[in-house]
Amino acid sequence: MVAARITVNGKETAISPAAPHTTTLDFLRDRGLTGTKEGCAEGECGACSVLVARPGVHKPTDWVAVNACLVPVAALDGQEITTSEGLATAGEPGTPSTLHPVQQEMAVRGGSQCGYCTPGFVCSMAAEYYRPGRCAHAEPSDGADAEHGPNGFDLHALSGNLCRCTGYRPIRDAAFAVGTPADDDPLARRREEAPPAPVATEYTQDGRTFVRKETLAETLRVLSERPDAVPVAGSTDWGVEVNIRSRRADCVVALDRLPELRELRVESDHIEIGAALTLTEIERRLDGGVPLLAELFPQFASRLIRNGATLGGNLGTGSPIGDSPPVLLALEASVVLAHADGEREVPLTEYFTGYRQSVRRPGELIRAVRIPLPLSRVTAFHKIAKRRFDDISSVAVAFALDIEDGVVRKARIGLGGVAATPIRARSAEAALEGRAWSAETCAAAAALLRAEGTPMSDHRASAGYRAAMLGQSMLKLYAQTSEAVSA
Image (cartoon, rainbow, N blue to C red):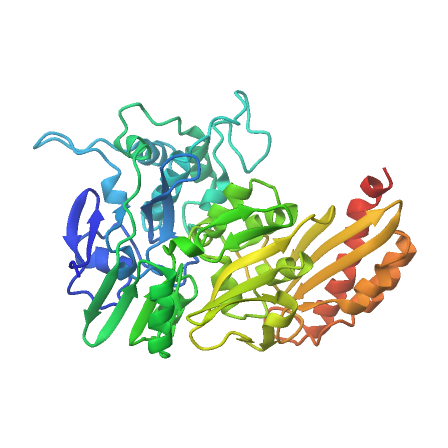
């Protein structure tokens, strides 16, 4: 096995002697790259943002911004990253470096004050700067809305970055002022070449091991032999456990680059989404083809998190407040579970068995999520939270309805945050099906929806508030869709 190595700002370096749980953030800072900062260690502030060369959607390589505080550096064995220090172009000996266009705009427009958060903003901004097709949809005069600039810059690229002193207006000004990469821009040219291929890794230090196998079969064999092993994809959940709760594992098994878990196929009767595709990859590959998922993605955490988080990971944690389960329940999705002994398909309605518990057996992984076709035409996702974006749901409600000739033929409603597991709103569904799509029907369904689940009171919301929001969500759906449906 070749020694684990990583390319940082164009220079290859050994990962050793870092421990297998060492984050990329700590690894970089230990090597003097202190532009990468630790603010929260939970993936919420973006001060640790760095760029990773990943397989592209529209070009061979995409520069993807991720939270370095969450990703174990061992997970980047054989990979290539760029930090804020690597964006500037080095000058001749004795002369200063030339600022990257993103850095230049942040400087001249007052986007940095204390400077602590600035490197993270710069890296997230650079990922959007290099996004293929960013300017293709831009209007020459203005940006059409407050979240998209005249240069095509999507401010959601910065939704995972926080600033405490400068304020966001000058940062927004800088984002909306950047142009297109020059022809000789080395990071832009890098997109035309393939990213580093995944490498098999078995990195051991101090009795703990980080493992990445080349195939799913090999991975399943390891999990069968090591029941104590922790499977990890984007590390957006496990990284928090390591940082905040000091969790350590004797064996971590990486799933994020397994080709069998990274396929997206559209068949005649279903869509199959690989469990290790990131939410950003799914969003860009589907390109609005599943409207309910398209509505979910902007409300799921931040772009930095979506660049690492996976559907497999979100379902694998079994959290009752995960945002994807209500949507997938409304879409009547199923999960494909893989084990060394074979595969099985389980409807998502039968997958959750209790709080953070599921039907998955030891050594079994989620290989893919299947969504049946055709899709319902009337869909909506309502996330009730304290902040508009980048927050945990108090309540999440997903609707998928088939309405023909003014009558509800089929209704599927997925709920999160109101029980020990994500659930279907069976009573409300039954109250809708076979009835006219009317204010009276929706009012009756809303009354039943308020009684679904067993909501509890906590620091996010009271049980009464959660119940009220369920009913209100039904009424909101009718208000949003009644004219379109009748037309």
